[in-house]
Image 1 (tube, each protein chain N blue to C red):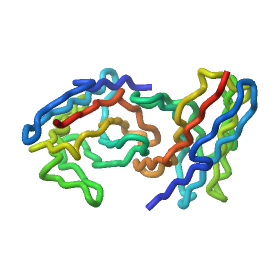
Image 2 (image 1 turned 180 degrees about the vertical axis):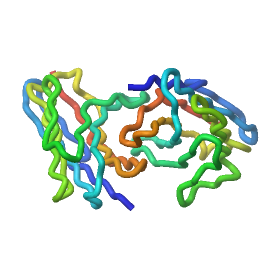
Image 3 (image 1 turned 120 degrees about the horizontal axis):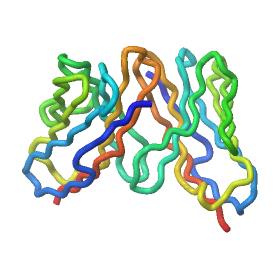
Image 4 (image 1 turned 120 degrees about the vertical axis):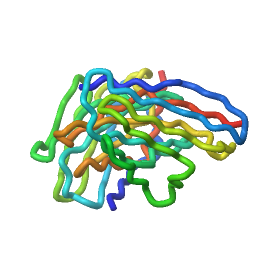
Length: 115
Length: 110
């Protein structure tokens, strides 16, 4: 399977600042990347799906102006949480899939804490 | 929209017991279904992936079955060990869309 990395693994920021999370597919051409969010003791919820070179498709209830997603290449997607607030504190996980579309490979996750 | 239910939400068993985790999903038109393990504060570890044409997959002490037509999957863990303690998530996959259940939190007591 694909090897997926995320950076940073953990970030603490002040309320009102913006935070960028990177998701890299190290050995796999990721035509599609996904971003999930997981609150404590809850399951993963899909936030958005992005195809390389296209705008991301956001799930209902996810603010696209707050969670900016860029998928500029087949190996990199970024999620920027703008003007972060404490309620944005969560575990963010990315995943990638290729042209076969029948499996996703997950990154290790990024824990965001907004003070 | 696919909805995934996992039962039970939590399970505590003594070491050595065999156990079954259940997963049901509303849209049976899936490519495959995957079972994951998640340790507290950590990411996902893929355990088993069953293609829609398969009925079961085995890996060591783990066996996952799939009844696609009825929208059900089970994860069987044989001879449970304390190291199996984690949250287990099932995720049916269809057309580049993966949805997760809320998980079953398993505790295996020594």
